Image 1 (cartoon, helix red, strand yellow):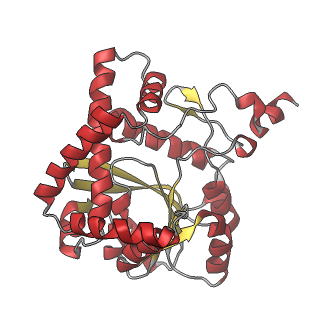
Image 2 (image 1 turned 30 degrees about the vertical axis):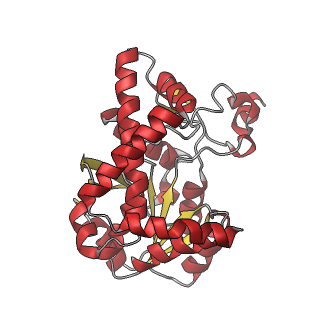
Length: 302
């Protein structure tokens, strides 16, 4: 059934990927009407998140952010499909970097790097970085249940010299590559919400204490790996610009949780600049008020 599902859907995805960008975004406008107006995909989650994050904004302001977010969500989905047939020339023109020299410098030093980013603007096309580096990159991801679509995702990334690594294997692979002194970049979309039993750190984010994963910081400290944040700006429809910010090139010297906190603050700055480009369909505030039930809360009580 998974095989049949893939081959029923894939030809349509391939045809969509072949659309010129102008037609792709016309199609995106149609998807917006279907997703937002008719289906109302995750509207309750989006509205809850926006109300929690921006309690001082008026209903009209929140509605405007909501509509712009859904337009961007549809664009992002179709840009992901466009990756199937995207050319190097197109990618270089549409996803640029202001200071890629920072990444090249670490590569020239022969150092492995952790690159953190949030689900903001375009995280799908961040593999454009590999066009400017000599060594291959690794992106940590959650495996797709359908193995045929999972293989397709790996093939797309592989075309850009990026290997997808299942999140459950990330620590093993990092340890192996550090030991072998491999030169590469590990990319993490590090703003997902941990399960409550693993919520060890609760920084203040958008006015509320909510948990962040601390795995990147833990590995960086254990293996002395530089940590860099990639901030992405949406210039206009279909065009993005990334800027790298060094969080630390000596993570062992940084107090515990400071790197995670720095990432949370950097992501918050992006969101406040333009909230419409953050992934509001994710239940970012689902543990709001539950810190006392987490390892961090229990530790503070004892």
